[in-house]
Image 1 (tube, rainbow, N blue to C red):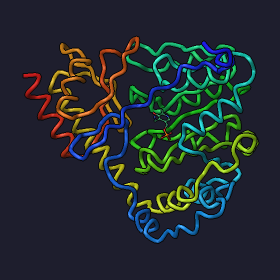
Image 2: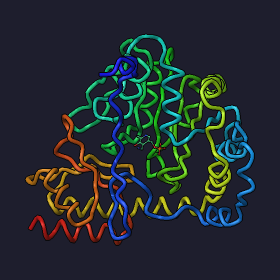
Image 3: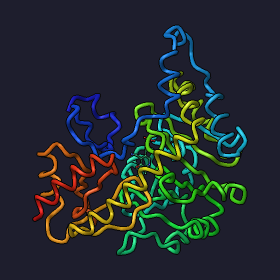
Image 4: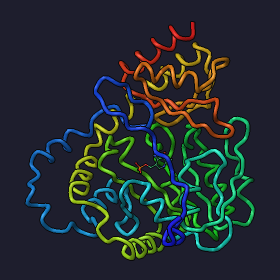
Length: 351
Ligand code: PMP
């Protein structure tokens, strides 16, 4: 080791899903939306003049903040935007989890949480989900430095009913509670309705899934003005211009088109419900999912074997070689045609 290397920050990074290139593959591994963004996005892009990029964007991204505030019936002082919800969540960890007490999140959950905690030196504990991968709110009654969980959870897809989210909030009023709703638009009910009662609640959402804009990197958070102000202060202490101009302008277009949003999320839910029956018929079991993916385990065939067999067919799904979940595959809901190709292969492989 060279002497200066001794001073490096040593981290074990998060490993994002593969982004294989090519037009013939079927990509069901990173929970992207199979439909294009709202038509207004393509239209606005056509008219975007490169001259616009000469100047810095609005550091407050006010156009996008206003569009989101209007859509969700909140004040602009209750909205924070960032470069994907990963950016928003990282900023929230940095801003809110400074008590020195352990932050709580489930043992099986979004694998970025422990990475941010380690990066920022935040202690954490991971209460185990039950056998069916459900959160027990009672596990969150102990003393802690904050709580964060996705709802629906990832990679399981399980939705925690809002009464139980509120139960966790009721028992954790002295710390920030972050509900990561990356997948909420596929059937769950949002904790946004609890914002009025709990000033310590931060609800985080994203344009990457239900709004088909993973490539644009737009995430946002809703919370009390006190929480949002604190997030803004940290953001402006780090990088004022997080949101690039195309993200701001095109994000507004996506939020405007409510009909398209309902149509495409509705279609994904419909295809997901059919996929549940197909997987069941093939001998798979899974926690019930309210997300745009299913977390499936075959009765006899190991997940890793299926993962590799699918990959040879250019069908990409996600496999996590981790405790408790190494028997499972996470399969994103694609188009009807993509799911048909997946099931056609599984039928021939398994029979
Ligand atoms: N939260 C959860 C639970 C996720 O699965 C993801 C997707 N990897 C994210 C947040 C981050 O998504 P993005 O940064 O694209 O908004």
